[in-house]
Image (cartoon, rainbow, N blue to C red; front, side):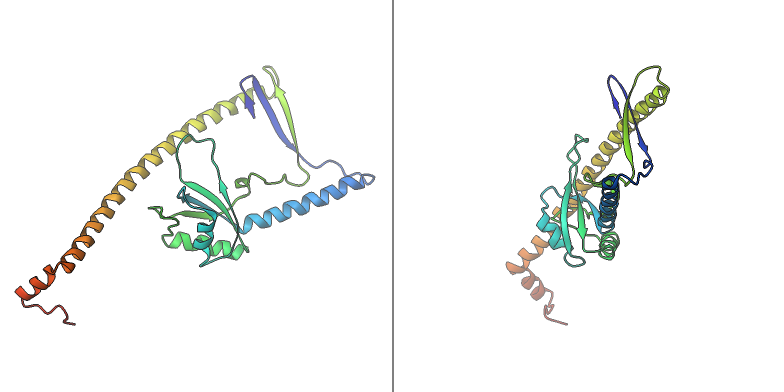
Length: 226
C-alpha cells in the first residue's frame, strides 16, 4: 500500500507457534478455518455476471436464471474506481457448484440477454478476490510498516508504486477504448433494429390496407395456396 508521504509495506506472516496453554486461541483458529471453508464453498457455487443493464434488479436476475438454477442471493458489484458509466455486474449465489457450472455454460454457449440489454451478458465462475467480505486465510497475519527513504524495502516499494500508477493509467485507457467500441456497436445495432422495425411495420400496413389483396388479384395469385 502507498501514500503521498511514503510507502506502506504489507506482508503476510505465517501462523505463529502453537501454544497448548492458549485454548481460546485454538478455538478461534478452528472457527477461522471453518469460516474460510464455508467461504470457499460459497465461492464455488457463485457466478459472476457482467454486462448487466443498470435497470436490472435482483428479481429480474432470479427470474432469468430460474430456467437453469435456483438463485440463493444476488449482490451487485459496485466499481468506484472507474469514472465511467459502465454496465453493472453481480455475484449470484446458486444452490450448488453443479448449478453454477451449468449456468455459466448456458450463458457462454447461447446469447443470454437479461433486462433488455442489447448485448448478451457475460458469465464466469466466481473467484475469492471478487468478494469484498472475504475472510482472511486461517493462520495468516497482516503487518503494516511505514517505509521511509533509506529503509531496505523502500526502493522495491517505490518501484511497485510506479508500476501500480502505470497499470492504472493503462487500465483506464483500455476501458475507455472498450466503451467507445461498445458505443459504436450499440449504434450499429440500433440502426439494424430500426430497419427491421420499419420493414415489419410496412408489411403490416400493406396487409391491413388491402394492398396485398389488390396485388394478388392483379397477378392472379391465390394468397391461400399451400
